[in-house]
Length: 179
Image (cartoon, rainbow, N blue to C red; front, side, top):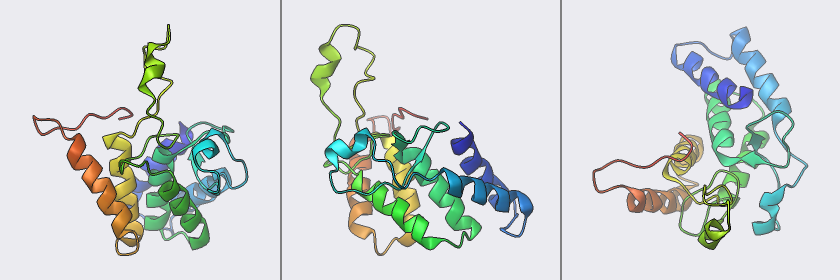
């Protein structure tokens, strides 16, 4: 996905020492700004009636399905780059906070989508009807919120940390659904 890849590539360029003064960082920030979904309310609104949009989608022109994972990566990149439109970052953070599930974790596209009975429908055994909170997505949300404002988001972060601790496997690892 160009959105996901642009966020991660931008982060790696920043970590290598480039700054917002570099034209490649500037172009990436401008391109990502145009991709933020600020008006369309997709399926995620079913569990979030009053939540305003503010995320990014994995694919081009997929405004009905922004995802928490891409949004967290993009916000981390834009913030580290020194992106000036802080209101846009705040909107994205508010959207991610609103997508936190009751158990403290985050799914990729939805909140509290853990209806496991759906896996019993014929041909639905691959789990694609569900979007349960996962350790990998939750970790990126915690990282992003900690980077943006650890103090202001303390309770949300703590709830996410509790989820991560509960999800840790006996061998010490975590399972990641999305990578």
